[in-house]
Length: 248
Image 1 (tube, helix red, strand yellow):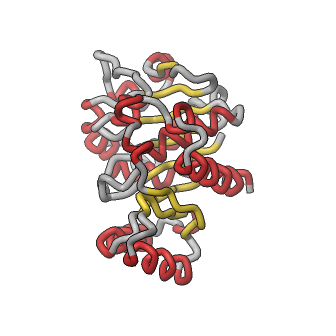
Image 2 (cartoon, rainbow, N blue to C red; image 1 turned 90 degrees about the horizontal axis):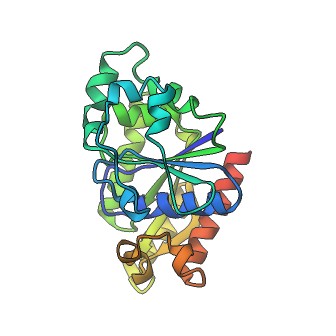
């Protein structure tokens, strides 16, 4: 079982759209896929038309076992399940802080699903907390969507500094450009510069497209309702790149 996390401190960069679309594409490839929606905003859960349960106990959830498995919901798509978002997840940091090996506890929790899933994708919350550090250490691969603008690049560099400070291996990180508008000179120049300077950037560029914005209306992954669109094709390219890295 592999763990793939989609993360950025900055919101509004296409993180959740990427998590949902990659989860769908992985499931279509035959991988038993679990999407964990740890972002309190719950957008992944919304896109997949799944509501969170009422009786959520984070401390009990982290222990794994029957309670944790009962929280998982089937999606409308074969091989794709979801651990829905819940407001109670905001207490994760307090719970983790009280536990031994607190920065690795999440991996132990995710490993409890190893017999049921080939791939777990984590839609991570947009912040840096003990939960975030757990997600980093639990992941076989961390994907960072980056808009090709000055502030987004600055945010990416801040993440790199955090990894170095906390001695978290950055070789498990890959970045990709999202919400790209190639008609903008700044976007073109930023992409060219970063891909020349930083080999952590994948060559795939997700375009700014209305078909992606309409995920909230359709409440479906882009490849499910617009398979022939350029955005769908680039998400497929992204999945192929990610899948190859996970298999190596």
